[in-house]
Image 1 (tube, rainbow, N blue to C red):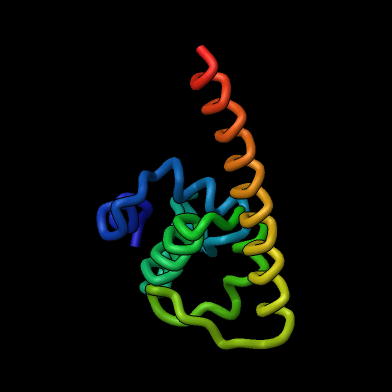
Image 2 (cartoon, rainbow, N blue to C red):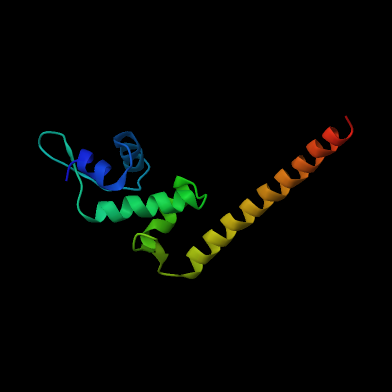
Length: 114
């Protein structure tokens, strides 16, 4: 299928699909005319990428976990490395949340003093 069809079927812009390709998240074939051609599995891959982005993962992390993703949701074929990667990402998110809560508390403190 061409990029327009993949865009229509996934709801993801052509520009973003080209970005996914550039980041190594999406495979494509080039025809003799230079057009990108995607297989049926590309629909699932794009939905996996969207789900993982919505979970707060970077494209770099997604590139490393995508080979273990199964299905659109996605579910994972678990291994120790994948577990370590996702646990590490969760720890980073927890640190950011803690930092935001501290900042919020300080800001709220300024407001209560006014």
